[in-house]
Length: 457
Ligand code: FES
Image (cartoon, rainbow, N blue to C red; front, side, top):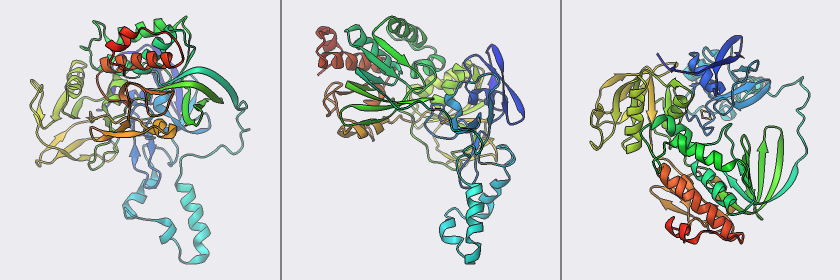
């Protein structure tokens, strides 16, 4: 029980500790490990609780591994390559069977080594050495030569678009078509964001008569040969006054100064609160969609939490892919036809190493091997906060306060789910609007009728 590969062309294998792990085309380290039955990818820092593939989009640190000697690499955001050596960190002898996990049995939940391990005083250095050995996020290589990282480079571009999901791609295409030179950066190994995940997940979806996969193909075609320079595995890790961005790639760091910036960082799902919500097998809808995209069924017996149309689409897609949907935990009857709806909330997940069952608030227990959380998404606001943009409460979460796509900071625009989580259509239209508004702010002539139709201010 657990994830199972449905399709995929074998491309080679890499090492996970002493084990060889086969991978297919497009696999990340995490998806290949899951398909090979390796559910526990890492351990929590303090209590060494098992952690697995949880968000699937690089937002939770549940899948950190040591890769070719480099600690704390996100397995869900790193493409598998033949010959690489990955291993679990912060555990002994393995992530699956970690002796240090005994600490959870003996230490109280509020155990604080700084306050507790103070007597006798002469043993304090020993305590420190032991705690340091057991805690942390991997070890820096001692003997290896320091990695050769190029000096920080400076660059100036008229427009930087952050995020290559539907909104970021649409913004870059629209601005590029208006004659603006654009740098599009995205931290994932591939462009597309939700278009890829939901292309696999919501198979019936259409945008202007196209499937998400077709919409992504159209956008990528529009990018090639345009004014847009597109970079994957390039993360905008900070934005500073003067629209100066720190852009980190695997082997270099750049200071990029832009005249205008479109921020489209998306909106990851919020975390649900219930017992053992960190157990391997509990994953966000994005993670489940990403696995389907890799040709992997997240589990055979699914409990799904969520009540909106997206959750229903996910449940049906998992059924189509061969999973048994045991329950959809949703308070509303709407759209649940043919699905086993339960009007109850999830209290606790059972299973020592991975999900085996869930306990519900109505006292029932359901056996399952995966829990998919289709919770409301929350705008990723960190870059907006750094840029000094005003925020406003929206649907229970904070989002940048905007006039059209314009934030309160001149020259900084917002697009897509980061502005307002919505459908793919909304994200694509919002991205195009932001791209056109940014182009107009840079003095380009844009199609005002199109902008008006998109609802620009
Ligand atoms: S960061 Fe990889 S699963 Fe969340």
